[in-house]
Image 1: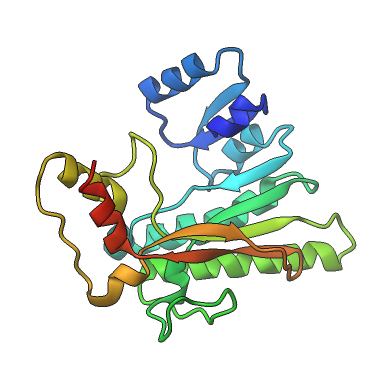
Image 2 (image 1 turned 90 degrees about the vertical axis):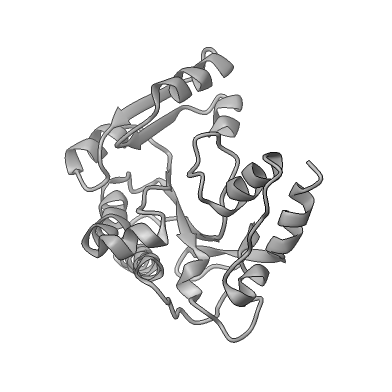
Length: 233
């Protein structure tokens, strides 16, 4: 978002919560920027209608984004991650582009690392299943719009792993947890067997397209290297 504001691009944020101090800090950092905040839910068509006014593109980051949260409340996970994505697609202008924050969890526990972009979906948990179904919703929506003679929708799905950088991020995520322990001179614990080779990857956009939908491919990064590097902080 900050890169968009720095480039003088108008930004509208639709979210159920936006910390007031974070919002104030962003506006102070980018005085004169066009940042609008709409408090609402992506499942509410009225909220979406307000937020979508005049937009040129949509970056969909809205989700139940933690595996444990989805395990604890599967109906909400599916409702927000799958149906919510469908509502966003239906509400956005037909000329808008679309970026979906998907997840490497759609692959589940693959036999080979790294996975190819076209590796089959085999989610191992509710969260991964919801993200895989959301991708299917996007592909179907784009294909339907194209086949009906409407505007071609430029869409891409980024299969992210660990996201970090915000002071307001969930403290239990991999990178914040590693850094917090390193700065406190506490042990850095890695669990999950061979999880180390597939936890942290940086998204790289591909140039190939299928029905106008592109996917994000990741380079391989060892989470142990992140842990080792953090100890030098």
